[in-house]
Amino acid sequence: MTDYAKDVLVTTDWVAEHAQDAHIKLIEVDEDILLYDTGHIRGAQKLDWQLDLWESVEREFIGAQALSELLGRLGVTPDDTVVLYGDKSNWWASYAYWFLTYNGVQNLKIMNGGRQKWAAEGRELTTDASDTQPAAAYPGLTRNEDLRAYRDEVKAHIQAVKDGKGALVDVRSPDEFSGKVTHMPNYPQEGVLRGGHIPGARSIPWAKATNEDGTFKSADELKALYEGEGVTPDKDVIAYCRIAERSSHSWFVLRELLGYKNVKNYDGSWTEWGNSVGVPIEKSYSEA
Image 1: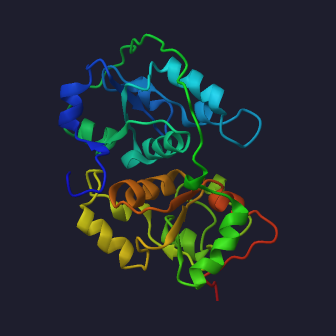
Image 2 (image 1 turned 60 degrees about the horizontal axis):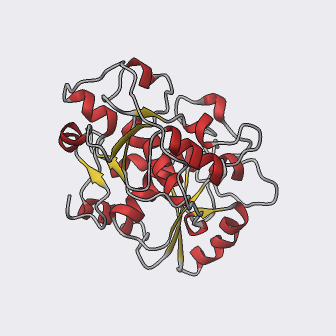
């Protein structure tokens, strides 16, 4: 995997060999929050992306103190390497990776191919509880706001796209991008008031970055995918989807695998944009 910009991936073979190492912490993050309980890699801890990462009342992330306590509960110290994996070709593992990076957590990696590849290879999944010795609260967390985009910033970024200095990457399905549907495929309950995309955005569905086994495509293939749509390393890039889980996957590809310097994930994504007053949209679908 040396063709990528950063050493942020490990193989299933590597995990099988090192999962029990003292300073390796495996964390499973699934869209299906019940999946972990049906079987997980031995020693892996469970992270619930909604209950653990979001405030219970406000639509905002947990603060530094709560995150320090969460990492302590998971047994993570600053000396550990955290290996994230999950279902859906690491959608939510990528989301957790972005969130932890945004909050200043270091030494993060993703198991390439995720749970899908591990299971396809016939490797062990256990329902045994994973023992961990709680660590002291993780110290010194500071958010890096250069990694997160907010609505008004995205609105201003539309001009940068027009000027050729910025790029917007819409990683949703083509039908979501066009405005034909207002929800992710098979998720009709999660629609919004308006369909379409942010003006100037390029449609690059997240899954184009992966192989059939859930692993990431090569650096050369990924470079061709994004640069072919005008998303080049010299531009300031903002990625978005519906609630930022799919765009976290694309953020990971652009920033961590390809080494783009200025990439932000728009956490509000289309759930916020499509329901907001005073923001523009474009459609490329007409019922006529």
